[in-house]
Image (cartoon, rainbow, N blue to C red; front, side):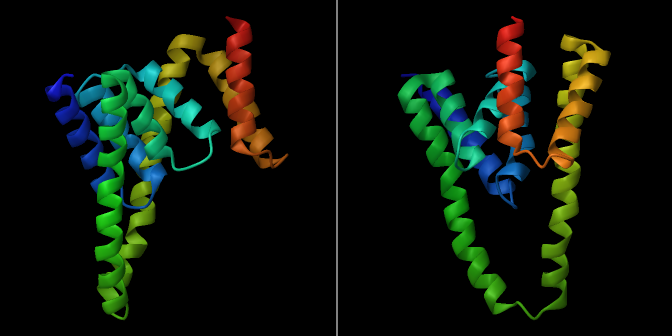
Length: 178
């Protein structure tokens, strides 16, 4: 058992968990930063695969990604450490924030602060999506990436198809294509 790897897993997922205010989607770019850039546990393509797989399964995305990445890095101990590190900040922050927000809910700057979180999360998600799009244009070519993106958006918006079905279909397509 490599204690240094377990320490890195704890720190990486603890940071992502504590800074990912707003739920799982806001944590994804933070996990990507830790897993790909900071600790180099995987590359962008592997991270994209983990994210796609995590989106097809029920439950919070951050814990699914933490479990997979933790296991990938350090087996069962890594899985347990990564999931624990991603959950601990949420539990403590929820207890603290709920008590503070209920105490100071009438203060205008508190209301403004909570409303300002949504655009920040939107920018973080756009940055992550753009990074994935650039990566897909490299591996698929820009024409295929544009076609798949447009078809996915149309299928989601016009036919109101659940994203998990679209992701699952694209995974099946990729497996058949290989």
